[in-house]
Amino acid sequence: MRNQKVVLEVNNPNFSLKPMPTSMEAPLRGEEDIAMHRRLYCGHYGNCLDVSVREGWAGFTCMNCPLRDLASHGPGSEPFARERRSASAE
Image 1 (tube, helix red, strand yellow):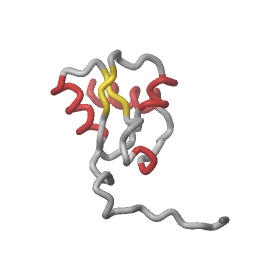
Image 2 (cartoon, rainbow, N blue to C red):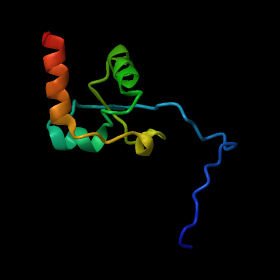
Image 3 (tube, rainbow, N blue to C red):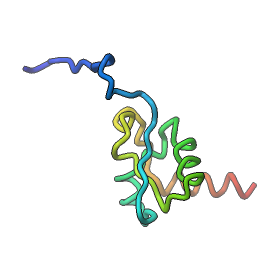
Image 4 (cartoon, rainbow, N blue to C red):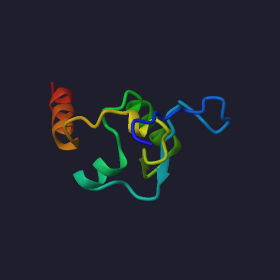
């Protein structure tokens, strides 16, 4: 069983390579919750955020997304948020 490769079943009708944010009843609070539920460095994060806003969701999670484990974890949400805030202030 060691060194066994995982093969994705691309012909499976349930398999999707599209981002799939999931609505949450309440917004996320705190760095730990955000780190657990979101992949801020995912290339699709901005689009998923747009979906959340457009649909009027209180929050969203990446927990059910098929791309979740492929997205970069990055250095953490707090440094990223600070960087975004400073960029928008310029």
